[in-house]
Image (cartoon, rainbow, N blue to C red; front, side, top):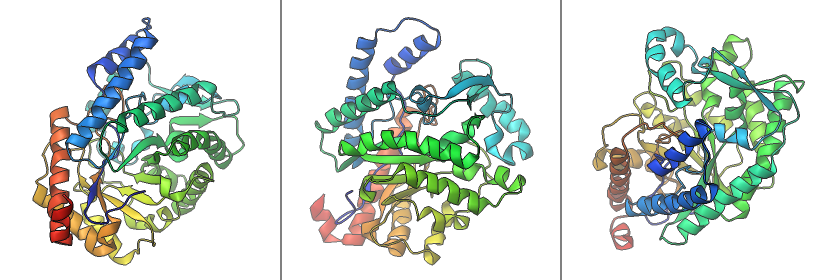
Length: 397
């Protein structure tokens, strides 16, 4: 994995707004209309080429496929795993913690409507594990397709690195109930065994795998309310993730932690300080963590007391996905410099807080605003680089 040796590199968390052509195929599939799969595959390959080129044109050094080949950041897995059946779930917002109780009206009026719309007004549902979990042949073929599309796209542009995002076991499991395995731990490790295949397909192809984990933090209230020790629960989930990453070189792995991409108060978010030491035991070289939104920006001070282990890289969020304001490059530069002073300039890659489109039909911001944010991120990184490296950074541009 490349690092910021002579200037601050830039990246983002992965998901970008799906183009109209891809959304049209998804809408047709939802309505049980026939789909020309050959045309879909050709359009998907073309759109991945386009979005990778756009990232490079806007100054992004480490690019993704925008998650164009996936239904959503976790739901894609339903097409790649065996062992589950679908049942109605009227309480699908349970992962929001105490916030949903303090601000019930807000969530009823905003998130519930949004989720219902993106689920195409179907009954609210959850997947229940009733049989052994296995990764399917269809899943392998789909993952290899996404890998091939990414390799094709990055072969046509000048970028520093490329990654593909996938879900962590802990972020898949809360969406499902388990009726087959004897314990939550056994269930998690079964998921990890299956996901290991997915992770390895990505890294064997020479790409970086990014493991997305939003639910680890969002079950903070639920775990404590159940009387369990939250840190021990996190340790169990990290052990499962490390099992999924077994045999994969650490320098091919980046781990993304957020407190959920949805808009809202986020007053019940677990403080970063309560689990940062556990996160650093994950077998990943790079850690992507929210640091730009007003609920978590102050947590840059965590790195005053927590040493980033040798060889590790921090990808702090310097741009928020959750607000329409386009951050000024000077503000971005200041955020970058804070982290550079604490963990070393070569160990910082400027990134975003979270993805801009967690699924088909979900867009946190208008596409033009997203590209403006990424352009501003690149400009802020250039400003910070000149301050941190001086003439050397100017010469490298």
